[in-house]
Length: 289
Image (cartoon, rainbow, N blue to C red):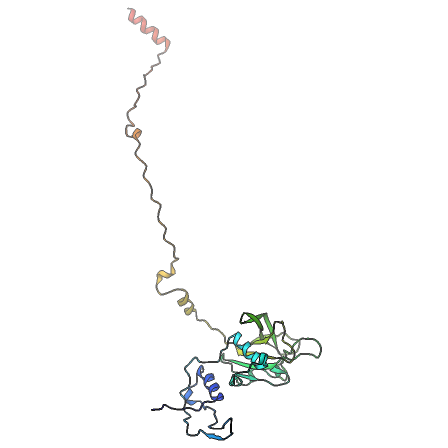
């Protein structure tokens, strides 16, 4: 017996993958799909309304999380380098921003699909110069009511190696906000990883780049979790571990023979008695009598 059939299209697949790692119930999500579509050859309308709309969803943890190398691959395919073709579903996962100011046309929280729950959103957009002259790229967000808001690069530009050759570069930027122009800028939790192809430090004017935008969650670490991680159960773990060392055996000294007869002098020395001269003369006189 044939199993259930589901209507599958790019939008539905993308919605499933985005919801697989979320907290929502997949059964309650309104999946968007078109049950009727034309045949790509003869343009005949195919009615798929009899196909069930209930999809069990995808397992928790399934998500669109490409590596740096895979992001560069999608970027090359988007630009058509070496006649590469982008994946037919890629527009559902990496949205294209066609605004004149690129991704800086609005605050990141206003970008389509961006949330402040730690999830990541990817965007295609073109690199735009900040001024007519020079090579400095636009980092300031325009049309924003938060004050002076702009992206600042942090750290060094990292090379992205594809098939053993540097094919692109990766920059990490953090959003800073200053309530007034010229005031002290404060760091926010908005982070952007920007990718461009080539070996140059900066992206070229008008070329596509990919930006990965997310709101970095505050990492609250419980004290008891630290102790549980560093010290296993049991009080013995709190004692410093010392590697066993074989004790050096004390070799007893052999008994000395001269100490056994310490009261007896082995060699009898003659005893000499000293007598004063006057006493010796008296002794001779007494013997003569």
